[in-house]
Image (cartoon, rainbow, N blue to C red; front, side):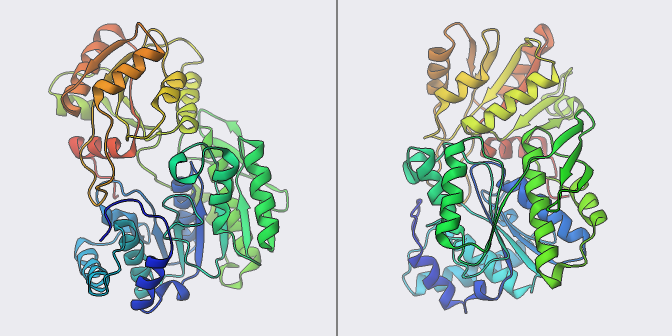
Length: 439
């Protein structure tokens, strides 16, 4: 089995053929993009569940362990079923010397399991890119969705937004429907539209972002395809959720209008589905009492966590904080870890203010992803000081020490503690705090 990222479709098609081509029997919503794939898929899943459909959902990366990438009706595949299915797939792979990557194995497990469970619809998130991603195995899909694009994984997808957009557009299908979320970069939108036309997509829908009615309460107004409006309380935080929720609603509205099987989805299903959506680790507050219990001293303020790991995502994080504090220059105690290869210089140029403090730490080795490695915390500090010369910095031995140091400072000096930089880092926090993210 290959241990790194190895884009290409030959191995996954060979593997799927040997397990009786489960992908050919699935009704699929396929989602690519740089940011917002996960929350968009979670909204769609929640709406379909509210409407009474049996769903399968495949997200990556996993949060706590590989099996939570694969969900039936919103819940991770059981450990027993995951191990049994994994054994079937890995045996086929090794017996036939396919040398599939861990992600290809995981993709095959998910599609095999969705087929075995006879789900009504499979919601499949692209792992990396789109055109050559292991999930790009479907001849037909209910809809292809492209969420917001930005500069990430440039060593695989190209060093400009047009190249990245072309790779993402690789999931579009001839005579299929494509839904394109609002794009920050005009060149990205132009490229996606051109690709959709060249492929010969039947419908090309450009999503209008929702707008806040009452931002503090999360109440937003969102358009349907016929330009009528619906008001929904969005449970996930940040302006990016205006785009993600609107994209999900466009996808569902199109689905119920074009597929008889989904014609019974009501506006109420959409409202309740959106409002009951959960997607941990994104602009999430952790209660101070939980931290106090773990750190064994009194923590006076809640912790803000976010898996933001690229410039576009950290802009959303910084905007959220500035809005929360009405653009007052509040002292931020950042706790930061990042995957090697990320542009942390650009990230720090967005995040850091002169009076902030930065604690750098690493995250634990990610299960099933041996190619993922963490920036050395000392390197993180060096880059941060290049961006903000006089920033107060600290290198922590582990996450507990990082939290202890940041909150000791925060208790004395005031401000806000924010933990960010990688979803793998968020996973470590959930394990440390023993937070149940599955319910």
